[in-house]
Structures are given as C-alpha cells and as structure tokens.
Image 1 (cartoon, rainbow, N blue to C red):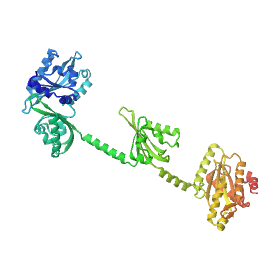
Image 2: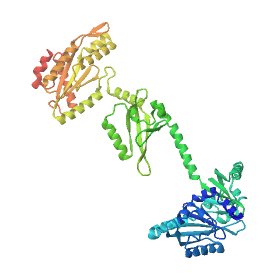
Image 3: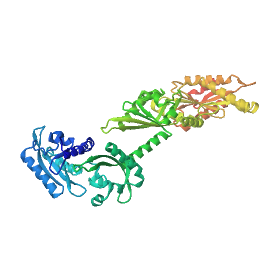
Image 4: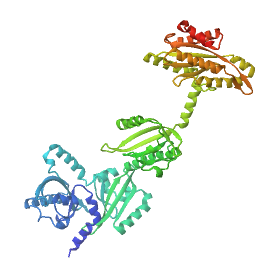
Length: 563
C-alpha cells in the first residue's frame, strides 16, 4: 500500500493539475525535498523518454547513467541548500531514443507559508539542435528566459486563505506590483468588493468539484486601475496535507478590446444603409446584411451557397466581367457601377466596392462586396441629361446635343476622309399657323413634322430641333450628292402634305439649306454659318425647295429640287 505521504502526493497529482502543467510547452517537473519526482508534464515525458507512472515517487536513478544522476542530485541539493533559483546546461539520457541530449535547466525552490523549501520546480529546454548554430542558440536562450516562468500567462499558487505562495513574472505584470509587495498581499486584496457573490460561487465550485472557472473578473492594480482577467484554477493538496490552489490568470484587456471592436463591426454591418455581401473563395454567398435584403429582396436563406451571378441583368458583356475579375485579383479591389436585377426582376443600378480578404498564407479567404442602390439617382441623372440635351416637345436632340454630335462627326470625317452633309430645315408659314390657330396647334404640327422628317433620315444620321421651327440633319458618309438631294426632296414632299390639327388643317412647306464638309467649310462654326446662308438662299428662290451653299457645281440641282 502507498504510505500516507504517497497518498497525499497522489492527490496532489490529480488530473486537473496535470492538465495545467501539460499546457506548459517546456519539460516541467516537481521534486520533493528528497529529490523524489512527484510531478512531470507530457513535454518532460517526451524529453526523458519516460512515462510518469514509471518514475513517480523515485529519483529516476534506474533510468539515468550514474554520472548524470550524481549531477542531478548535486544540483537539487544546491537549490534546497541555497534556497535560490539556479540555471545551467546539463546532459540527460533519453530512454526512448537511447541517446544523450543536452538541456538548459532551471531549478527553483517553492516555499511553504513558513518560508521553508517545500518543492523543487524544474524546467528543461532541449537545446541539442540549438547548440549546433549560434543564432538558434540565442533564440533558444531568449525562449528560455521567457519560458522559465512556466507560461506566458500568469500562474499563481495560493493557500486556502488566499495568500500567495508563488507566482510567475506574467502574473506580476498583470497585477503591476513589485514582487515583494505582491507576496505580502493576498488574493482578496486584488479583488473588487462587487465580485463577492461571484467569488462565493467559484469557491463553492472549487469545494464541490476541485476546480473553478473559467471565470472573468477584474483585478485592482497597484495604481488603483483595474485590469480584466480570466481565471481557471484547481485545488490540490501538497505532501504536507495542506490544500492550495493553482490558478492560471489571463490578461484579457486585448481580448475585450477585440470583442468590443467585433461588436462595433457587427453593429455597423447590421445597421449599415449599404448592402453588404460576403462570399467565400469560390464566390459562393456566405452572408448578407439586412440592407442587402432590403435592396435586393433576397433573404440569406434563399441565396446562401449560390453564386451572385443569379442577380446579373444581362446588360454587361463578358469583357466587362473579365476586367472586373482581373482588377480584383490584380489589385485586390474593384469599384464601379453594375446593373443587376432584384428578386422581382426589376433592373437595379448599384455602385459597388469589392475587396479581397486573404488568409495568412496569402490565399483568398473571402470577397466582400459593399454597394448602394443608385437606381433612382441614375433615373434622375438620365432625366436631367435628357432635359439638357433633348427637345421636350419633339424628343429630338436639341441645339446642345446637336453641336456635340456634329463635332464628333467632323472628327470622324477627318479620320476617314469621308465628307458629311449638313441640312438646315426651316418650316415656311409656320408663324401663320401659330398666329391663326394657336400655339397648341403649332406644337402638334411641330411634333408631326419631326416624325415626318425622321422617316427619311437614316439611323446613322442625326436629326435635331434647334428651336422654333428650325431643324437640322447631319448626314455622314453619304457617298454622293444624289443621296443628299433624295433625302431633301422626300422631306420637302412630306412636309407639303396637309397636317391634321384637331378640327383644323394646316399647310406648310420647307426651305432647306445644304452645305458639305470640308468642301464648303473646314470648321464647325463656318459649317453652321454656310448651312444657314444656304437655307436663306432657298427662301429667296421662293421657298419649298433646297439650295446648296456653293453655287457650283450644285446650283442647277438645287434649283430643280424646288420646282
């Protein structure tokens, strides 16, 4: 049977404390005052090549060479006698590998409440490979200095009255007390009073289950400020039979900050007036926000896992989407205007920003598309543009758009070497219609006249109303003057026919001036002036005819057309 001491030590080695020490990445072991091994973690088992059950309660002399055991025990005595931490390099035998290894070891005493050495805690870093390169050695040395405190998180050992028996540097940093001052305090000195009820629950859990946590609270630091922490702990019993508590303490200030940032990001995501869509690396929909549903009509459940192309309008070419993806994969982002369709099939204009989120290895993790509905804005822009560029009565291009198109056609003519013709059309006797029948009848006649002229204008030509009763036709690439004359003759004939103006009839004729670019003029302004003069020439000839600006070689044909 195990002695009472071994039984107490076995309780000390409960699974819960094993879980704590097994979290330490370095080889960690604890010996009693007689150098008997009472605790070691999995990293230590791997480093020595020994199972804990095989060495528990012994000094492990049966597994290590005599010269190594002599060294180990000598160092143990040095720690217990000197009462101070020592660190050194040593050789140790790995039973599993059947080879000697080199370790950098830290041994440190743990005192009981009376200040007597109670245990020896050792940490060993295997530096065999590190010894082969000075750079790796320095890195290991740096790692050793950080790991000798057992872990990057705070670890503290308290008695049941809350007094600190031991703690590491990480714990000291969390509390922000000098080591001597912290050692004189107890657990309750660091705990704000408002946590009393919560503390009672944790103590109850400790009494019933032997552990407590995870438990979030705050510590009062030396300057009076507070630091949020997360605690986990286990109750263990030492060889002296006195219970104590091992606690792992994490500073969760950064965690809280990130958590708050995530809450804020989630709030922005959920309340944003812009639609947001997240897709995976294969462009399958992962998530959408409420604004997305409001704008498009699609619920997440309907489209999750599907490709966003289900919303495509068909208005964009394959080349458009190729450029879209080239920009995203090349620059990591794209922004621009896209026409899609809502769930009900209605067209929708969106201003979209797409960004790529990559994982740490550089691979695409997510695509995030953020967009606003600009459909109404596009409609308003289109309305404003049409009002600025089209005649409201006839829906023909107005003077402004006419000049712009004429300028483009002149540039095209300069590139291709093909001439263009400009026709100025003035409605004869229109003023009489307005004066006798009224402006509303005149508007009806102007609308009908524009439709009659349109019948003889090619799709490549531009028909515009300059204002009043004046119209123009820009005819590019006309081939020969016969084409121009045929168009002019048909327009004159169309406008000679009576106009039905409600209960009245109206009759007008047309005078047309024709000028050719670049034969008659080589600038836009000159071309307009010559066309206007040609139109007045047609009026001087008796109206109801067309006339060229240049009397040669077109004078005869121009006169004949008016007959």
